Length: 128
Image (cartoon, rainbow, N blue to C red):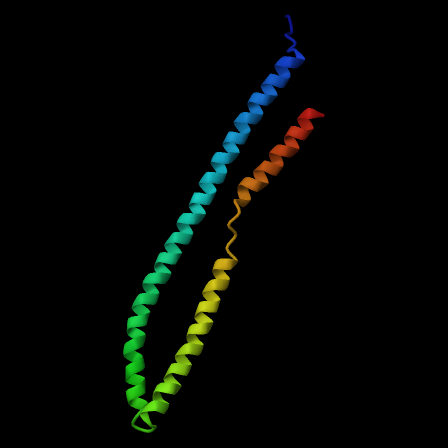
């Protein structure tokens, strides 16, 4: 049996080819991962908007009922002020919670970054 020995040039050529292929695969993985995250965020934002719109309509009706109900025991202006203040405070906490959740969403393609780190380590070992 004759054992074929690849030349140094062939080895570097293969390494360059495999590295290029690896980079293309990593880019495809990053694209897929980011698309999945964007789709999930889009659905959540859409549901948030729809819920906010429907909730707003209901809130207007309940607000009117509360103001009218309180007007039987308090002046109308004071009823409106109390109900408005309670709603404003509630809105602040709801908006703050939603914004915090959106800010804490990791947008970086974490799996891709980890895979690239592993690939870099592998390439380093191959070069040694």
